[in-house]
Image 1: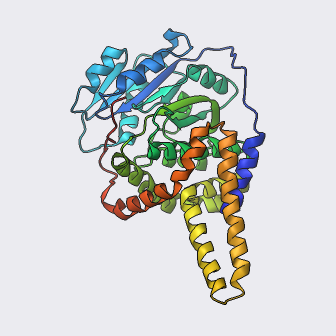
Image 2: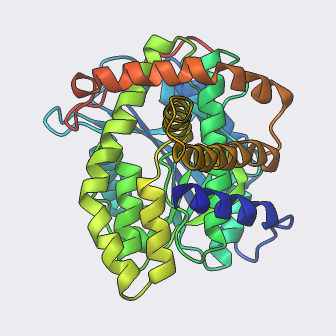
Image 3: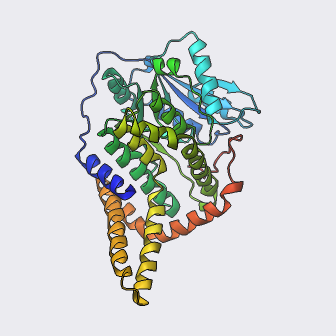
Length: 384
């Protein structure tokens, strides 16, 4: 069922048409919020990329929430042209707490904003970013998620594999989900909220995967997330696999907690009220990473094939079925890369798939001690 769901999204994504015109009657006022914990190393580049967007400068403010920082994040952010809000609450750490604190202060301030955008402190945005968001808001969208992808300049094998995963999960799947009429989901980096949505639904997600949590919170209250593929935010990933292990463990472990919390409400919604949209949200939540699916299918296929060779004829049929499942996974992968206009280096990076799968097994083995909901752990990145 899961592979059928992924193939359906792949087909829908291949049929999706991008917008080419972003003219709007109103130029909305944006606050681009950057939650940052000890991000002095790269915060300048993030702020500069936002200030370079093709949008009137007097209609956008960059606001850095320097959350429990012990380095020069606040000083460097101010020097780069951002407004800085410094937060010192060691008992309430994490991106979710920083966002709620920051939104509350911005609403209480003198400036009135039409929308808020959240960008991670290790990212750069496309030049058309605010123009795209402004147009989607004018068309009636209330919450938006841009293409959240990985900086292509990092050619390390682990970063390339993560980039492939982001293309499939943060681009192809939301593109297909848009066509189903439900929610495209929040991915954390490059989120946009109309001010009215945050007034009606104040930020209340504080888990490790606060983006996924808040997107489902909104969906269950009738607010969909619209995917805006034309706007892009590129995040920097670690070159050293050891630096990426903690980050990956937090992503995976945090997702399990959200599944426990939201799977039943989504299934109830699939039975009552919004069947297609709720089933889509449920399947998106519980679908494992493609490398996990592929690994399971390969192992099951080899096992049934071995049993067939050992003289159990009925296993031949199962071997064929597992081979079909493997073909479906490969089709989603290759067609997804084509839809995302991936360059040749990413196709070549697929030879690293077995190495990546073994690396993920190591991450799972060490997961219990690598993440906690109470601490904002900064991922170590190399100098850009």
